Length: 392
Image 1 (cartoon, rainbow, N blue to C red):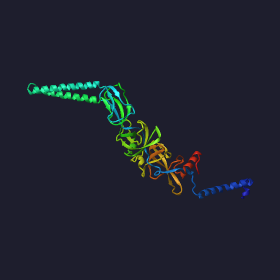
Image 2 (cartoon, one colour; image 1 turned 45 degrees about the horizontal axis):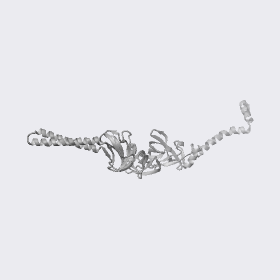
Image 3 (cartoon, rainbow, N blue to C red; image 1 turned 135 degrees about the horizontal axis):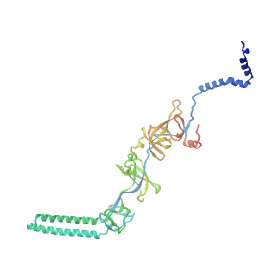
Image 4 (tube, helix red, strand yellow; image 1 turned 90 degrees about the vertical axis):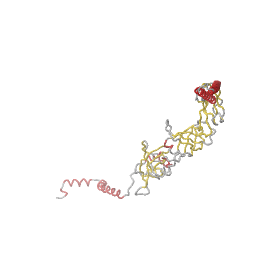
């Protein structure tokens, strides 16, 4: 049986001969072209499936200077002495005002002494009588007229009267206030004519014997880094254009139970003309053993906050870069989880990076794990981000 005798075959031939030449070419060639495309794709070198991401890099060892310890405090005399009367009474005179400079031993205030002098006179009179009584009993005892017990009682009364005189004179001495050291009157709390009780503060004196300092409180992490003699710089809110040098003079060894901070005192050079009570900020170039000083090991480092991603409480992700295994001229981004130990301005203190790690700073938000990255300058990256484009 021939093909021409089969009706089905004849119909197919008639259909094919009726097709236009172009259509027939496509029907025949499409499977061949597809096979060629697959072969071409197989022969082509491995092409990247993701675009190269432009980023800025920083090396941990190069960008991790010791962060200064910063705190806010108040400036004043190291010794601020509240001055008060030992006994109560009527204030007769207050001879100085706030801001007055005083010298050691200078009279500053006094009570009305009339009642106090009367008490001294009364004690003295009692002592004189006790002294006469004791002498008389002693003579009678020598003649066996007075008993030994009577002599002992008279002697005890004399000693008590002598103590009363001493007490009265001490009270009179402390009925006046004299400057215990040279300094400046910081506060005048009472005026003449006031009736004060024992121990009521009358004046507050800032002594100059041990100098003037800026006092601040440090959290425990910073207090462990600060050492005596560490250099510091001080700036005051009232004098924003001036910077004062100083050094750490004292670091507290126990925390304040109210705030949980440790007291630190910093000397302020060339600040004698400044008034007490100024609020200032101190930056201490700490050289201690805190987290930010552990360089050269897997530990503390300071990096830009731009490098932190997916922050969660005290941890975050950063991208480090390594050379590609197959192509040494390519850099691959790899995520790494780090612990965030603190923030200082636009810097973050972290732990968990190996020394000399290269991290992605600018452009980190556009990086995914395993992405190829290309180093660009900050100006180029800023322009790309502003235009919302990614460089090829």
